[in-house]
Each structure stands twice: as C-alpha cells, then as structure tokens.
Length: 165
Image (cartoon, rainbow, N blue to C red):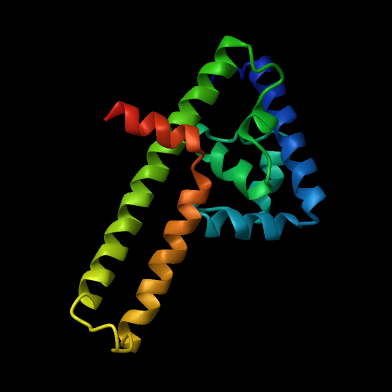
C-alpha cells in the first residue's frame, strides 16, 4: 500500500479539528453528532467514526461536506478552506454549491408534487367543507416542507435557476 500524502493527512487533521470545535461549540457529544448526521442522511455514523474524523484518520467525503456544515451550523468553507482563493478549494466549493442547489431544486420539485396532489384531492371540496382528516396532515406537511426548502434557497439561486431554463 502506498504511503499517504502528508499534505492530505495534515489537511484531514485540520478539517477534523474544525469539526470538533464546531461540535463542542454546539455542546454535542460525538454520539449526538453521529445521530444528527445519520438523521440527515449520512449512513454509518457512530461515535467512533466521529472520533476518526476529528483526529484526521478518516476524511470527510466531498458529498458529505454540505451535510456536515449544515449540521454544525457552519459554512462548507469554514470547514475545509484555509484560503478560498486557492484554485482547488475554489473548485471544490463551486462543485458543492452547484450540487447542493441541484439537490435543493429536486427536493423542492418533489415537495411541490406532494402539495399539488394533496390540493388536487381537496379541489372537489366546497368552501364550506372541512378538510378531511386524511388530507389535512399531508397538506400541512407539504406546505411546511415547501416553506422550509424555499427559505433554504437564496434569492440569487432562484434567479440563477430561472435564467438557466
């Protein structure tokens, strides 16, 4: 097996230290952080994995960085960048930004379909009818999810997406 690159090893230790600092700032244990990451869609997170990440023994995967950042309430740049003008860091941040926006738009479209389906079922009701119990909760959930996703997408992202179509 080839020796690991000392620059990459050092980078992993720096990122791990930033993760630990952000976790401790939230007052979370490694167990709590693992639970939060698992709940947000990163499988296999246990306290020992968090320990390996924080020590630099395990790298944060590129696709995981946005979830780590949002979970810890920091930016991706706060976790990975020493100098955002470094071409490699700049490219990584741009890739993450584009893929995060694409995922947000996909999620937003799915929520919109759920809301449309629920509202289509409601369409047959008159203004005086009560919303049936079996439809009230899906409508509430769809509206809440829609609002959360819309608030998560910056106005300039919306403008960018609309101009690309």
